[in-house]
Length: 614
Image 1 (spheres, rainbow, N blue to C red):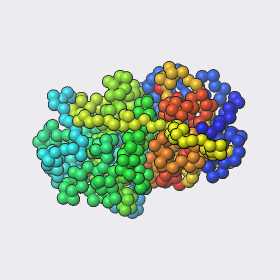
Image 2: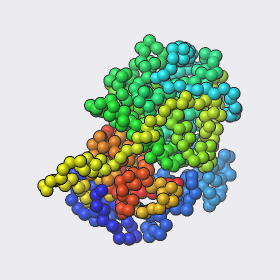
Image 3: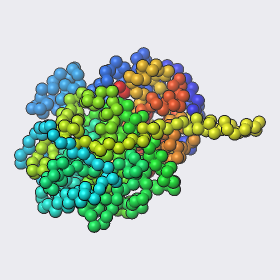
Image 4: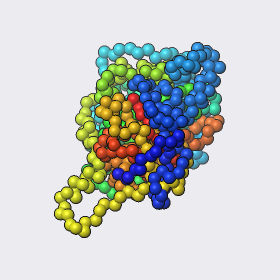
């Protein structure tokens, strides 16, 4: 690890950032634009993370507002209260944040408008579903027989014939039928590319990506898609398949989707990624010359990282809060970032203007493989949930999450309003997943430094043996905000060090990267901690020093969106396990390196800090 000089306690502890191409000054020599909050006995005048918060206390407006300003959050609530009706009862601004009662509400379907798609889009048709004249509320009902979703690579001929028949029937429906394949695809486009405004906020998009809404929205989306397919072939037990990309046997495009005469085929897929090409679960737009076994092992490491190491709390896994009146979603969870995003881009056709179909949200659901991809994303939610100490407990007790709602069409063409709280148990929705092995549970990465030490111990030492190069120290020549057009190294002070086992078990140390991105650009950048290379290469992703990757799948916004193409958000990664494996628990700080892989020009780093999550 780079040597980190202890900081003296002042009224404004600071961090400095530098491009790796210009590092010469000692650590922390000047005041930068970023302050680090410190728990408990802090003398810092910045907003703090509540150190006495209960688990799932995602409501603390002092620590979890999207713009870092608690007053702004209250202002939005005042706006909601002024609307009366649904929000009029939320008048106790001094009470628990849940009393604000500002869940994302079902959109007004009659006010759907086309997204502001690029001029070279291959399909500029309206992505708005039919307007519903009668909307009913979803009522959970127990199912006597569970639909079992199988891995797509292992289905038999009988299942495939049934699946082909169902998709063909859906595609044959009139385009005006809300059950038709094109209309189902438009549902995704409308919710994901700014077709809807937030109720009460005509200049704010409703966006289901990048927050705690991502997983529940897509669960419901697949649920109704599956019910429609079963109805069309008169088989209520029919279940859609999942693309088992987390297992070596499923780490390529399932062959059932590659028959050019099948209704499952989509011609807008990357020609270089057809079977037997192994998928890259952290694909950044470039294909590396690596062996299949090496890529499979890397994929298993990615899965461990995203479902275990970076998913120790609900917010790290599912995503950050997103409430009515928020200008942007609060930040993606680990699964949405990787592998969800890279699989989209890897599958889409790089020869199309915007990586259509799968590589951009406005056309993604026009490819039948989309539903198999998201079925495995949904399955990962179930796997993650099963590993919790209390698998039956809701991920959040926050009513703004539980009461967030969407509208879908069912197999009877009926518009149905659903709420997040009713989709938390797949068995109550009538389906489950076929059991398959989880080899990635045994793929915990090791420290790159420890591997170098192990190798060097087997080599005879000589008097003239060269010492391994040490990481250069950082300077303050570059301050925030900083465009990520080249690698940046930042030394970040830790609010607490040498934490007890009890503290570590009760709270996750989290690195928070505040960013602004151009939303219609494919972005992928890596985050490394205490890596000894000036600019860590992609092969370094296999080691524990790589703590995560941020990914943005291109998407667009409503024509009237006042915030344009730029979006502010946060990228969070858990540090507990990495710091332990790196032997850095007693260190004053960590050295963070941000490495752009693609789209770095579209990213501005606003700052970094460490906080704690529960």
